[in-house]
Amino acid sequence: MNAISPEVAVAIAIAVVVALSLFGRKRQPKERTFKCSRCSAVSAHTPRTIEAWRAGKTKFFCNSCHGQWLRSQPQQPRPDYSSRAGKSGCLGVMALFIALPVLAVSAWWVYA
Ligand SMILES: [Zn+2]
Image (tube, rainbow, N blue to C red; front, side, top):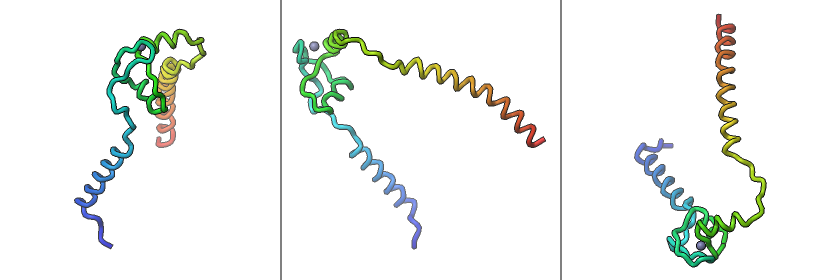
């Protein structure tokens, strides 16, 4: 069995990357803009409307109408991931600060 030559390996790698980028690409609306179903303003698609388009929605709302719609909705308790991430990041740093001396001492203990 012959080993794969580097050129073939590189070609295969490129083919895989190209195939992944072709098939893995998310669908996008053909039009870059949409007409707001509420105020009829023509707006550019945003990640939010593209997500709605992918979900099969045919009606889109511009950002200001979406904001108004959001405000008209009853407030739902939404987990605040940003503050939680900040806390856990802080905890992670603290854990690191605690773990480092412990590791250093235990390493010294084992190898001394
Ligand atoms: Zn609108």
